[in-house]
Image: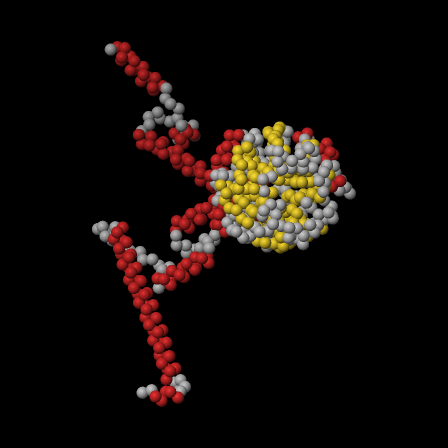
Length: 595
């Protein structure tokens, strides 16, 4: 018992001495002035101390609001708020025009959803334009000394002047046995696919010079193309179309696609478009392995092909000098343009979908504005151009024989008397293609392959959510699943992709007019009846609907009665007029026999 009493007394003494430290809101004004404070605290004072943090927090917020735009020294900020964003920078990231919301929009939820989505898109637009200043890389072009043409600078001199990593991007592959070669870069710009006319196929990780696979199909190869990732590629062989994986193993042999000469892959639709020697344009959905459509163009051999990256429209060049635009939804060409007096040799479209560049047998190179389908500029090349390619930054490469020339500002109307860069290879050029996100131009020719350094050709900054050049295998698999979920259906391919978010006003007006004629009145002319709120259970959902229907039937009866009366009046007027015309009309010889 004595031990228990002693233990309780000691606990009380220790509790009185070892009090928890006071918080900042428990300090009153007396302590701040150096005055002593009583140890006894009343319950009312406890409640006040608990309310103090909220008051202090509110005071601090108000103080911050009052001091907004001012410094510690008391000076005011001469430029308060966020920095304005130039309109040119906003236009760079703008994706289509805004949807004009009608003030008298009847569907409140739809209007609210549209306004919310527009606000989110505006915020994303401003953030993208503001963060554009923080991008790590910038594009630059090759500049020569005074009175020096950049086209006279050799690739060896450029490789010696730049750093080791950039200089290693210029190299030659001497493959004289199975050429000439066609090439294709993957969308990430890391992998290179080569296809020789005599059956040689090789996949290379060209930056590290690692050979992924190398096979010989023992047949003539017309074209090669990467599919949605670097895990699969398509080869247009002598008779049929084949699909291989990155190890060179044959996955599919598609016999429906025969005599294929050119191929284009639509990445957001997972469609492989092929043009054959028999004049057929075919689309293959690589996600399910089915043929989407087969269109007979009736325009002869199809060996000139390009795609518009903006709207996924396929452009075909023909021997009669025309260029036709095709969609898998129609059997007839969307647009047919007469571009050259001779056959079309090559064509390409820039990534914004605004300009198209064509070359023909008449030795002319023409630039067209696809929005208006008009020729902007026409240039004369002494030997013509057999292969064309446009880079991400708008540089045009034109191959003539064994010489490849690069031009700047083609659609700006500048002079093409002197190219920006030029390079000679060993043999006739069979294909040119720019590497994405790199200042590199790949050239396939009779003697193999050449990688040419072209400063300012590639986009310096990439979107890692769309195409990440440094992604791992796991990231590629994740991206592939998301891309399949976001796959665009082929029925949505059209000349103007912005039409998908617009309302067909003409069709809506026509349907509304037909509805008015069928009902006999305009259901949208008057405001809807809103029943008054009644008590004692008389405003239940069923009662409200019955009252609405009753009023609606009465209104409908009135409108129908009015239309019937108007119709009867018009009929009576017509009969009266006919009778008056009969009475006052000219009398004939037979009228005397009438009673």
